Amino acid sequence: MKIRVKHSKKEITFFIDVEEEDNLHPSPKVSLSKRNFSFKLPKGLSSKNIHPDHLALISILVCHPFIGKRIKFPKPISKKFFEATNVISRYVVENIDEDLEPWTPLADSRPALAFSGGADSTAALALMPENTVPVFLDRPLPLLRISKYDKNAPHVACEKLSELGYDVYKIEADLEYVRKPVGFPVDVANAAPAIILANHMQFDAIAFGTIMESAFGVGHPNYRNYPKGSHYRMWGTLFAAVGLPLLQVVSGVSEVGTSIINRDSSFGHIAHSCMRGKWMNPCRNCWKCFRKLVLDSVVNNKKISEKELNELFKIREAKYHLSQFPIKHENVLTYSTSKYVELFELDIEGNESMMSLLTKRVRGDVLEVDWMEKYFPVMFDIIPEKYRDGLKIKLEKYLQPMTKKEQEIVLNWNLNTMLNDEYYQELNSSFCKKLNSH
Ligand SMILES: [Zn+2]
Image (cartoon, rainbow, N blue to C red; front, side):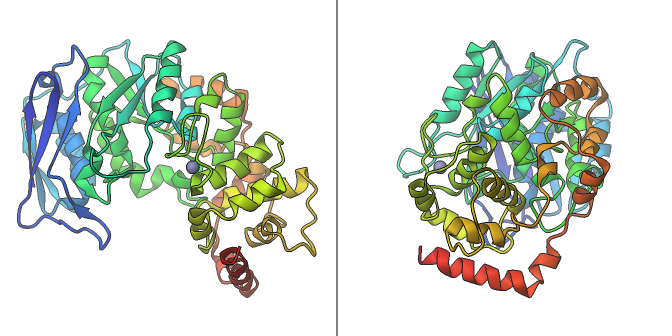
C-alpha cells in the first residue's frame, strides 16, 4: 500500500493506493471502502509543517487493517520511528530519511485529549491539567443517506468547554468512511486530528477515554494485563516514538467510576453518551441509553419509575445486547442491578420482574461490586512521569484506590466459570425468553 498526501490551504488529503497483497476484506464484516480521507485545517496551520512521522502514524492508524505486506509513507520517516515500527509484525514500513530528526515537543508543551463528548472522555478531561486541549473529530454526515447519528450533543459539549476556558478544537475528518461499516479502523484512530495539530499546538501527549472495561478486560471474559498487552505494546510504542505518548488517564477507572467523576466534577453534566438524542435529551431508545439510565439512577440515587423501567426493557437494541451471554461490559450491569436492589429495596426472590431476572442473570445478587467505585492503581504504570503526580491528586478527589483484596478481583477476572455453569445457562435462556416476549 502506498499513501500520498495532497496539501491545500484549507485541508490535507491522504490517498490510499492499494497494491496486490493488500487486504481489502480483513474480516467477513469489514472492508476497505473510501480510498482517500481528509482533514479540514484550522486557520494558521500549514499542513506542510506536519512532521513526516506524524503523517506516517496517521497513515498506519487509518490503514492498519488493510495493509498487506508493506506500507510506503507520504514522506520518508525518521530512523527513530522506523525502529519503533518493529512492533508491527504483519507488514514492513518503507522509506526512511536517516537525517530526519524525530519530532519532539518544546518544553512548555501541553496534552491533547481525543474528545468525543461522551461520558468517558469528559471524565478523562476532569482528571487532566487545565491547559489540556480537547480535540473533537467531527465526522461529516452524508448528505443523501439517513443516519441516526446526531452531532448536536458533542457540538454543544465543545461549546460549553470553550465557555469554561478550554481551547477546544473541532476538526472535520472523514477517515471513518475508509472502513465499511463506517467507523474507526483501529480504536486509537480517533487521535488522528490531535496528531494533525500536534506540531502547530505543541502537544506532548494524547489522552483517551479508554476505561478499565476495555483496557484491563473486566468488560470481557478475561483479565488483560494492559501495560504488558499487545494493544499498549504496539500503539504505546508508535505514539511515543513520534513524541506523543499515550496518556491513559481512565484506564484503571470503570464506567461506574467515570459516572461518579461526571456526577461530582464541575462540568461532568455536559457529557452525553447517546449518539442519537439531542444535548441533555438522550433518545431513551438505544443500548447506551439503557445502560446509562440504569447506572445513573444508582449513582445519583434516583429510582426509575415502574413505567419507565418497563419501557427500557422494550428497547430493541437493548434486547439484542441483553440477550448476549456474556453481555458486553456485563460488570457494569452487575454493579447497577446490585445497587438498584439495595438502594430501592427490590425484593428479587419470588419476583419475576425483568429487573429481578436481570439482577440474577448478571449476578447482581451475589457478587461484590464496590471495587468498581474505586480505581485500579496498576494504571499508573503507564502514565508518563510528567503527568503522574497531577493525575493522582485529581483522581483521588473523586475515587479511592482499590484495596489489595479488591485488586485481586480485577487480577482474577474471569467469566468462564459462569459461562460454563448450567445454572447461569438456564437463567440466561429463561431471561431471554421473557425479554423477547416483553
Ligand atoms: Zn440513546
